[in-house]
Picture 1 (cartoon, rainbow, N blue to C red):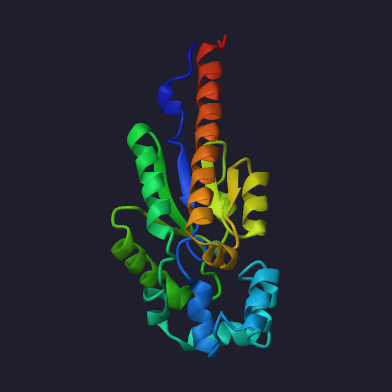
Picture 2 (cartoon, rainbow, N blue to C red):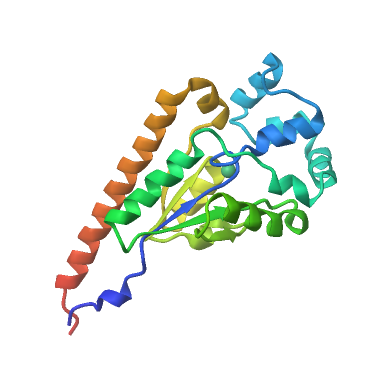
Length: 217
Ligand SMILES: [Mg+2]
């Protein structure tokens, strides 16, 4: 008996938001009165991989960091600016969906420390920027993982957890490095993501073919 095609979920790309599409770090630095172009700030952003423990030290620790962002209020999340490559990255994924009608795209974001402030504003903001693409807010991104799931995310822990649950991942480049590197490297990263997705889709198709030919007695 062949496996019915509807047994297969849609292959889905889950695209992270902060430091992949939107400049959370830049807005957080402004809230603290810091400039990312000051050499010692830039050093921390490069060494710490963008957002992370070292970044929180710029705010005198995690608690102060959380407090500082919370004090900005819900509107903080409505005004995060897209990175220069954001539209090109989303366009590249939309274009892929034109040739693969079964492919789906969703934003998967976890502004975890500030759910009361962030959730509604984030959904509104993403809808204004890229209308029609669903935004999923979930602090455990690995819940969306599986063989038909592809995550693009800048945080190593998110990528590791997603991979452990059977998903495919592309670890996005540190946005600070990408900002300084310019358009050639930004285009290269988008091209690398596109190639990786193609390989993943090919492996899914092979898997489906193998399942279609197997018999269950
Ligand atoms: Mg991120």
